[in-house]
Length: 179
Image 1: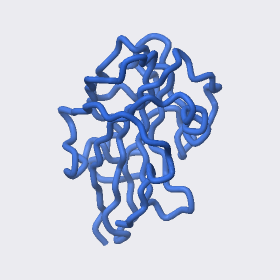
Image 2: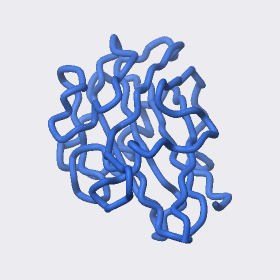
Image 3: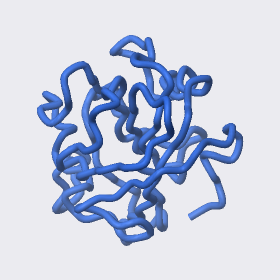
Image 4: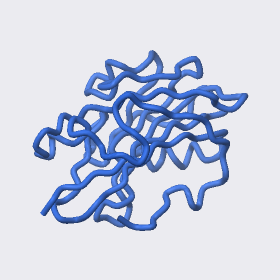
């Protein structure tokens, strides 16, 4: 939708590989990854499958975020944030971001998204607003725990990750609700 690049003002970070059985980079977000909670037909608020490889040496943990910079707000919309994923974990199953975090590894936790739910909330671009981009990012971090409280915002997580980020891998999916 816009040229807003959420990584433009962040320090450079090593790239590694992120793949998904659910969503393709540059492809449309499948309907189950849309929001049923916000009434999108076919939306299930189902977090995508994610698998990553080639994280930088020294990685001690990972974080995952899903962000829509094209939301009609001044700050975009955070759909999902997961912190403290152990460095030994390189895959999350589809649906890991349910209310219980049932697919997350021990020690990892979900932060409240912009709907104030500590879970994955799917895409819900306003009807007729145009195409939105969803930045699905795995962050390789140089610390075992990022040290944010469980009720912190994804923006606060990002602020705390800034000095610990070794690398990031991103899939950008798109979504749109016709007028």
